[in-house]
Length: 208
Image (cartoon, rainbow, N blue to C red):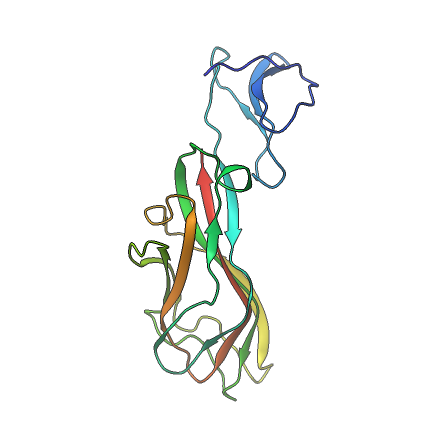
């Protein structure tokens, strides 16, 4: 693909691509919509003869907030009540894009104990899994650890929440625009109950 040379001060519109020269160096430039990416929209072209380049960008897709996610003292499977919809086109993944990597996102505002004793995750096999709308099969995206989400009631029965990103690439399951479900297997706390308030899960997708 060939890109037009664009003047340095050109304002342009979303979707414009081209090459510009700054201080004698050629740059590949892309006009991106607000919120699409977290990097500078200008990527250095290492060879001035290069006229095309791949730009990797990312977007987060979130399920609606769930008031409470309850973890009991018995090992169970907990299913978040909301799904994540990954759109395509201008509101999501561009048509024709290639998905490079996908991570799961988790966040909640508060962690609360209602057992009356110190509480925490108490199952080393507790994990978040994800599946697509076609029920291809559950894939583990994030693993909790024993002692995670700890509440010390001598201090307070309520502690702050957290924001977490998985490190497992789940692009083998999240491979297109679709509706995705999550479940938490082997969910277990030391006592009943450990409550994650304003729980929300999402998907972060990188593509080019």
